[in-house]
Image (spheres, rainbow, N blue to C red):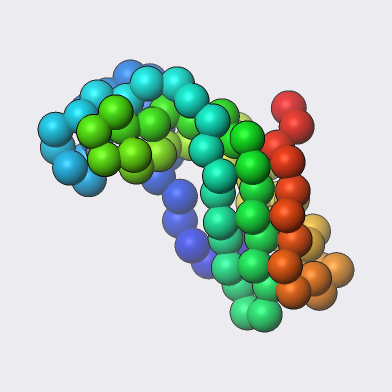
Amino acid sequence: MEQRLHESEATMKCVICRQGETAPGLVTVTLERGQTVVIMRDVPAEVCRNCGEYYLDEAVAAKVYRDADAAVARRAEVEILRYAA
Ligand SMILES: [Zn+2]
């Protein structure tokens, strides 16, 4: 995918708002490429308690990209997936 997701490095201060600290949670990730929009629910992430920005670890991001690429390859217009470890 062309978009970059923020990758997490354990618990940290949010780089977006520079205020909040992150905590583990589940987020919905939306990726868009060409005509395809992929929405993935229940993705484990570190979530900023202050602004809600989320950070994915490397393995999670890799899986999200892989599943999104599969949807693009199927030429889906909108694909709603659930993250399954
Ligand atoms: Zn934040």
